[in-house]
Length: 247
Image (cartoon, rainbow, N blue to C red; front, side, top):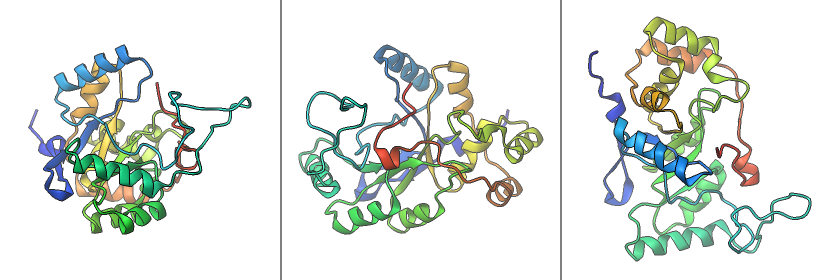
């Protein structure tokens, strides 16, 4: 097999913090044992970007040890007294104290990103959002690129939810012609358009498949950009602050 360097792509981090591998591995597992084994498998395959330390949602939850505070009706309990800018100031202090080099945002709208960038003393290095061929987030990508921010896509394959991206006729058609899997096509599309990504799996075969991506020809990129017309957000976390992809 001819070596292709796409999977080794790195995007520079602002503030002189080096570069981040574009192909990353997510850690959204409920069971710590599963997390440990999955991350070990990812490292063995070649992943060097492991997802961590961003503001995970632009919402503050009720203070306390409960990571998912809810009332008797099952509704999430928020803390409306804490603003996103206040939370961002806390991350800036972590950089000042030398506890991290780069900080970022997650599960957020373009409007909120603009507000943070305008107010920040230390600019976000990364913005992580759901993004895939059904939710390309072109406007957010353009803003991020203008400000030297890496856009990081979670669910770049759609997490198997309906409508299934990996069953889209455009994606499967390209995969057949290039002798790749639909997942490899979707992931390569992400990196080639300048978007880093996170994949998550507990199966070594799928972890390997997700890492072994290669460059798509221009016609394939054009077909995805022009012929995939479905537009769908699969995870409501941007509005609710509650992730639904945790395994």
